[in-house]
Image 1 (tube, helix red, strand yellow):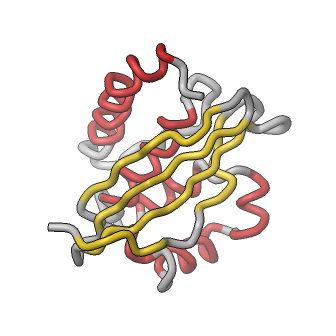
Image 2 (cartoon, one colour):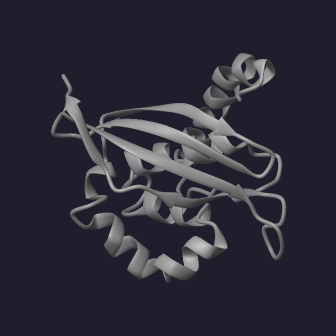
Image 3 (cartoon, one colour):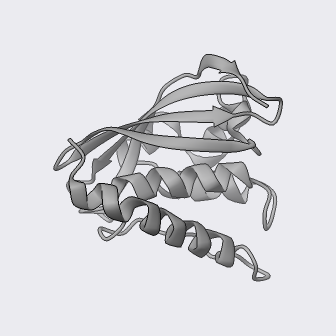
Length: 162
């Protein structure tokens, strides 16, 4: 279940993370947002989606690199290294995430160490796609205590947008 505190603070925190990501894009060389235990699971998903929405800002494929930064070590082992991950994101299954029009994140389940979200995404072509996004806390190593993405489902067509 989503706590009442998370429900109250989510819009504010998401807004602040979005501003931080956008402000980082203004400089000549943007800084990646790095995994940190202070970043909530929904913020991880929001950071990745905003990066993919503006994939080539401030430089080509910066959004893919930012998304990779929050890929859980197990996910990296399965989908990496980064050049292979980038090819996967540019492929037919996930390519429509890049430079999409808009997205909405809906919490499905947020537990102590795992969280699941439904993501509705409108592609630049106007299709509405549904993804399931899973994140987990890292248990050991460099990113211990940080929430990172373990899986993103294949997209399902959910309708036609504006």
